[in-house]
Every structure is written in structure tokens, then in C-alpha cells.
Length: 374
Image (cartoon, rainbow, N blue to C red; front, side):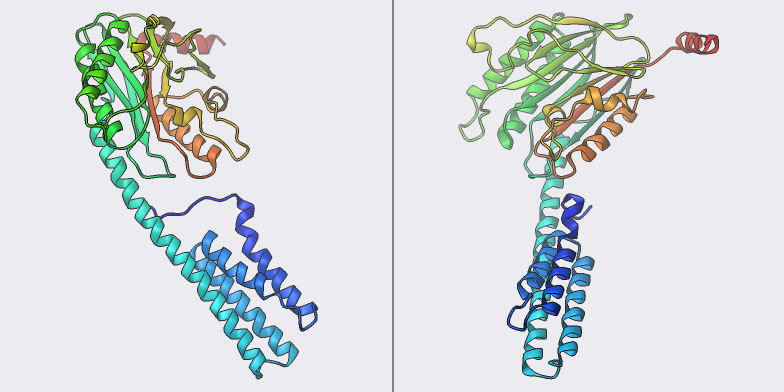
């Protein structure tokens, strides 16, 4: 298990060294009554909070060597004043080590709790099949790094008489209420996907199951709010797909070097808000040519921020890395890209589902012929 190591901007890691240089320079050139000890103490504690144990020890050793050299230069190494100066410096170094160990212990505990949360999430959220017919499938769930509670992201893929149907959803909230909602949502989807020929009716069945479960759940674990969801149907024998958006972030179609969002003019209401009386929007049809990949994400992807507060845009960022050979390569690239983008702990869970319509033998021959002609 990886140890806890928060990621800071690169320039922050130089703060202890700058404080050491400033404190020793102050001691070397200022009058005897003006000391740079506060900066040296701050350097040691800051190193303990920001750096590894090895680097914290190095900062402490540098401070001790520097202070000892200054006492020798001033001729106070054998005096009481010099001894007190070295003792104070040693105490500051031990303070830095103490801070480092406390943070490391807390980080290891958080890693364990987060690992348990992810294991529980995956138990509720089993991995989809890697292949259904000519469709290659990959999925990934990552818990938020800033906390260690079970989240409410969900996805599912199922072969049905109406084609391959898939869903991705985001339950508002965390904890037992979210786990219960995810379990009910997945069960309702798997049952209704086999029976309902219309995606709108499928969404209604899922919403009815959630509302019914909420009525029989204790107040402590009851789901509050709503669930955004995206339901997709890949039509059998046709290079197309059908999408029903229930207030969820739009999916993306990756084809060749292009990544574009499949946005609808008016997404429907999230699941759980049907009591407002508004009619559910109908599904929309989109092309899904061979060799393209459909990418479904939760808001943990689209709301990831960089240090300037800018949101991550898959359409812009992924276009520079295409084309992708399959869903696993796309998901791995997306996860690495978001980690680079945020540069630190994420504030939300992240669920990703990708489906590639693979090129048939005839399609590959056509592509080779087209390439040879160029």
C-alpha cells in the first residue's frame, strides 16, 4: 500500500531550505542581540510537515552544522551561550522530526481507511465484462483522496434483448445512505434493462425503486437529494447508440483524433425528482462508428480543478493524446491526465466507463486500403 505523501506545488518544497539559508545568514551578519533562531525553528517544523523523513533529517543536520560553525566562528562554542544555542537548535530539529512522524502516522491510518472504503465500494460495484460481442469495455473507480468515505458513484453494463445497455450514475452524498442507493439502483437497472424496451420506461422503473426503498429506510441511512444518471443503449447491428440523460455530465465520443461531448439541448431531471411533475425528456440517437470509443464519466472528472481553479475538460485535454487503441488505454490516459491536472488530492470520487466498438476484419481491410491510397 502506498504511504501517505501529500503533493504540494514544487516551490513549496524549497521553503525549509530558504528558511535555513535566511536564518544562518541572519545569525552570521546581524548584531549579537538579533538572532535568526525563529527562522531556523520554522525551517525544521516546516520540513517535518512538507518533506519526507530523510529530507527532514537533512534539514535538521544542516541547521545543526551551520549553528555549530557560527559558534566556532564567534568563539562561543565552549561557552554556556554556545551550548544553549546548540541545545535550542537540537530541540528544534527534534520538533521537526516529531511533526513528520505524527503526519506520517495519520497518513498511514488514512490510507488504510481509504483502502477499506474502496474495497467496500468495489464489492457493491463489480467490474463489468471486458467484452460483449464486438464491444470492448473498461471501467475504473477511484475514491476521493481528501477523505475516506464510501461514495455514491455507480456503473453497470448488461446485454439485453434490446442491445447492450449501460449506465453510469452519481448519488448525492456518501456513507451508508449512498451505498444503499447504489445497491438499489444497480438492482433496478439490471432487472428493468431486461424488460423495458424504452429507455424512458427503464429510468422510471429505476426511480420508482429508489423512492420505494427510501420510504422503508431508517432516517439515519435515508438518501437525501437525487441521483444523476446517464443510460445508454448500443443498438444491435447498427453503428449507433441511444442516450437518455438524467441530469448527468455529458458523455464523450472519441474517434480518431477528435473527442467531442454528446450534449443534449435539455437534459432531463435527475432520478428522485420525478415528484416535481415534469415529464422526462426522451432519448437521443448518436452515431457510434467502428473504431470509436464512448466515454462516460462522473463529476469527479469534469469538476477536477488545477491550482488556478480551472475545471478539467476531457474534450480538450484528451484530444492531444488520441487516437486511443481501446477503452483501457483511454481510461489509463484519463486517470494520469487528471492526476497531473489536479497536482494534489481530489475532492470527489471518480468513476469512468469506456466502450469501444471494435473494427471488424472487413473494416480493418478498408482502413488499410484507405491508408495505402493516401
